[in-house]
Image (cartoon, rainbow, N blue to C red):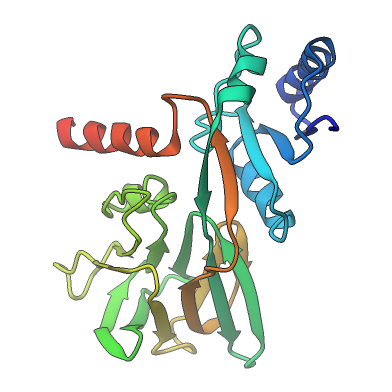
Length: 256
């Protein structure tokens, strides 16, 4: 069997970890051909996953950035043992389809969330449907976002959206600074749902649609659904799983 693939961003810390890891793998003769080790931050991990969307490989992240929610903590002493004993979880991304004011369509994947944001000083005016069912006829706000369970502790948490368990099979729809109706706090729907967001006034109130870090400006119609035929296999150290991290964030919210 061949050795795992190691990729890193250009951060000095990342490159230092990469060189050390190469030596550790050589000395310990660690082999796992279906493993990609990703060294960097959450943003670099998201980029890597999307580039390998058709791959069935496993991804083990090592954090060299700031928060690193999707990543593992690097331990020079225990790294080989951690790689051998890591547990796998599979997550499916969202697929965002956007039609702009010129009726041109673009599709993008999002692992954390799809956010729809006002593009000018004017608040957005949005209609939101869940399949054929109307959720809200006219949301006047800074925007709205649709979050996966994996992304529910990211931007979604910052706008006071709910934290979702990884096995919940749910998506969260959360408003961003709602002005009207002011008391609307969003909705939790099935992960099988197709969510349709329409800009009610594209000329006066332009919006942009963002899938993680891919932005489409002057959006008119946006649809969001789980891309169930794509699975990203993420590897986590024992007792430091993504689900455990989500639980910790939930406890922090409840006790803050």
